[in-house]
Amino acid sequence: MTSPTDLQSLTSAYEAARAVPYSLPEAPISRYVTMRDGCRIAVDVYLPQGAEDGVRFPTLLLFTPYFRRFKLKPGSQETPNPNTGKFSTYFVPRGYAVVVIDVRGTGASFGTRDGFRSPKERLDSAEIADWVIAQDWSNGELGATGISYLGAASDFLASTGHPAVKAIAPLFSVWDTYSDNYFHAGMQCTSLTQLYDNLMKGLDLDQRVYLKDYKYYASPDYLGPQPVDEDEEGMLVAEAVACPSSEFLGQLAA
Image (cartoon, rainbow, N blue to C red):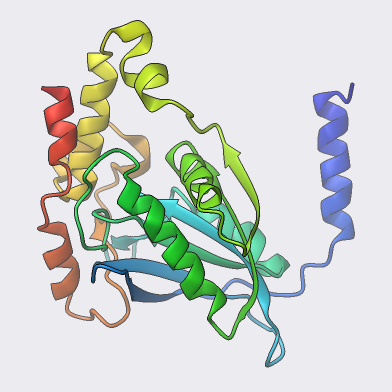
């Protein structure tokens, strides 16, 4: 059996042998992608910088309810994407495009969340995949990863059977949220339910008072979800945040 130390050594050797030919852009391309029902989903696209014209890249997808990117106070040194930044920082210089998506009803995306990891969200992931492989920077091959919710979202994408999805790496994701998290052995875990409800009210409805106890999101430099590029005045993101997207969690906590 390979020990953790040996595994780390093997990983380091593999990384050292691979070229890092590109760089990370200063900011991603950010836009809305329209779904089958007209719902607009906000995406950030990080493309390797320094590539020759016509080079196409495999793409890593990250579906998050925890803001693809925060708007920051001017001059802030905070990372705008504490939940996903590590992936774009690592993979983009190594020749991958990275697309980070505010799932339906979260961040700058429109729509409402009709359930925890809802069927609508699952269908959205396949439509996002269709959009990505149609771009002139895509080589038609997709992967997905992420921690916790994002890991489960990669399972969602794979479950659609989309032919462009070649690999997923769900990290620490939950298979059965009902029995593993909220109703273990049939009894409701009210503390976890309330904690997560507060987190999602703080994010989905941009009510910062609920985020003070969450290290990732408590910084006063965070000013809500980052608008997409076309939304220079922030009117669209304000409209998206105003959608009632956390009602089902409040009902679950009641």
